[in-house]
Image (cartoon, rainbow, N blue to C red; front, side):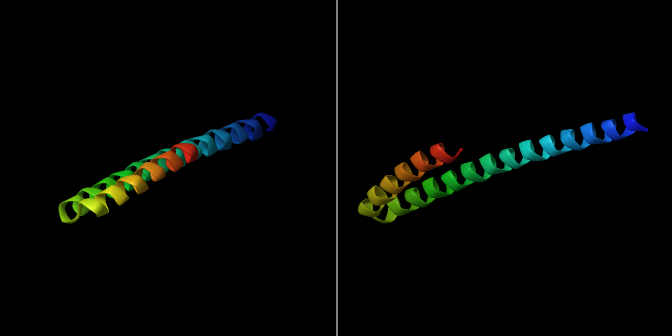
Amino acid sequence: MGVNILKIKKERVAIFKQEQLYQVFLLRIHSRRLQQSIIDTCWHEAKQSHQSCLMGAGALELFSFTLKLIV
């Protein structure tokens, strides 16, 4: 009986760890998509206005630095 409880606890811990790894994986995917979205927006702005692109590039650099601190 005690062995079954220990086995169940180990399985729950393993599932919890897998869920944590999956959440980190999703966060990294989201951050990459967000970075790409900002790059795409900056490129679009570059087509419309050089000054807007320069401001966008500065914001992108700041965002990238902040994201590196988070992830």
